Image 1 (cartoon, helix red, strand yellow):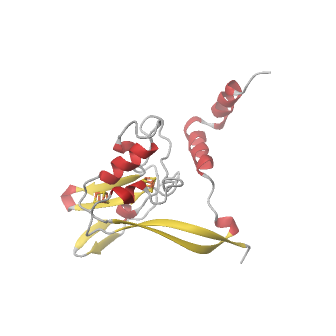
Image 2: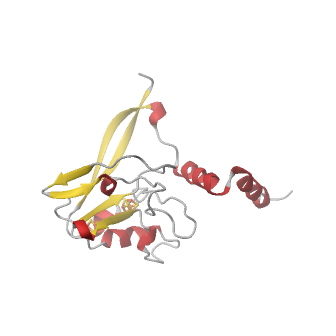
Image 3: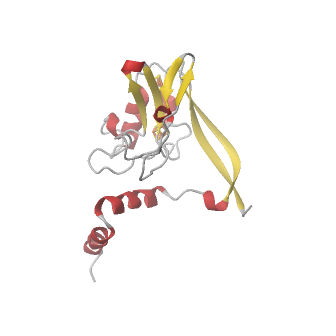
Amino acid sequence: MGETVKKIVRTIKVDLDKCNGCRACEIACAAFHAKPRYSSFNPARSRIRMVIDERNDEWVAIRSTDYTKSGCEGRRVYTINGKEYSECSFCGSICPTRDLFKEPDSGLPLICDMCEDEKEPLCVQICSRGALTYEEKEVEVEAEVVKPAEMEIGLQSLVEKYGLQKLADTFARMSPKG
Ligand code: SF4
Ligand code: SF4
């Protein structure tokens, strides 16, 4: 085992029985991350989304976690309290098999940042049903599994979308002259 580092893991638990699908969490997240802050309320820009399958009476609030350039093979079905949920219903990955968590204009990934330095994330604060619970715990992880920063993930997706050369040309044009 390599070198380990201590890390605070911040997470949000979802209680499926308490959530009524009101989507207030989506609105709060989108508004908090709008620029300027609270200037728009477009749920398509939220980092938490309701996954809704009306035919199967399936709805779950999920938070975006990471960016991945390929979809997985996960096709399991979970039965909870007699109700069936697909594996995708619980997955926060931003992947090519669905449109969730992609900025509508640029297609850039929208990754949950736990509302930066807010004491309690906005989605948790707004949920009047108590369906979302914020938790913090300290864990020890191998140094190499610490994930790349959000900027790196955003750049990676831009490279995939436009190609390295186009990006390099754009950066060159943007660089201050002289
Ligand atoms: S605000 Fe709470 S009850 Fe409403 S959709 Fe979000 S998690 Fe569910
Ligand atoms: S923690 Fe903040 S950024 Fe993450 S989903 Fe909730 S409101 Fe959005």
